[in-house]
Picture 1: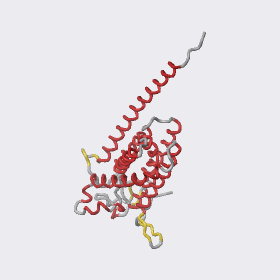
Picture 2: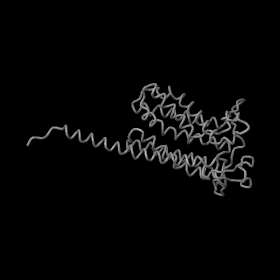
Picture 3: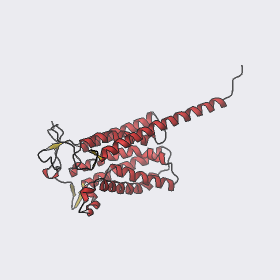
Picture 4: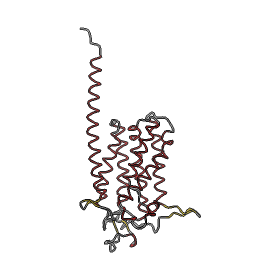
Length: 280
């Protein structure tokens, strides 16, 4: 049985003479997997083949820029005195909130330019984002970052003394929040596919369900983490963001469900009114 999870000595994978940063490799793998699946889902929904591949580069650029900008703004104290570090994304520091926001903005702009259904496009991509997160989170493992509080559980993550936050130098193992979030993202991915297959949600609801489910888990993972972070009323900023996005997504689901029910009822009344009466 495991007594702890060892961490890699460094985050570099040597492929012959070419050193590859594991963090970037896993992020790229997640993006490629998401793009491949999104293309298949879009075609299955009746979309034109090649659509996702043609817009993927813009969505990725928007996501990476948004992810880094959010991280730099939210944790500006990490870059004080050395702002050039803001460009060293291979060292870690890509916020999922910024990635989703930047990617969503890119999708909106590209969809309008190509006359695509924005909500249908986002519903198509939503489960794929969860899959990308499940893969990409392992980059934090190789960087020994974003772990949780100290723990003696058998799956506690070993962290090198040089990577431990101030005040936690005496502890050896910590909650592997990267692993928790990876598993949770896989569960979200599976739930979204199951709901889509069995319930056939209204336009935009699959996206809202993704946001609600992911932020529900992220709320608890943020409460576990001990890495330095800015706070509002003694609570980490990302905890507040998770809570607000969760409430917004739930509200979206409730309101859109009401609209969909009224639309079905109206369509039913019109069908009944237009049907011929039987003769007696």
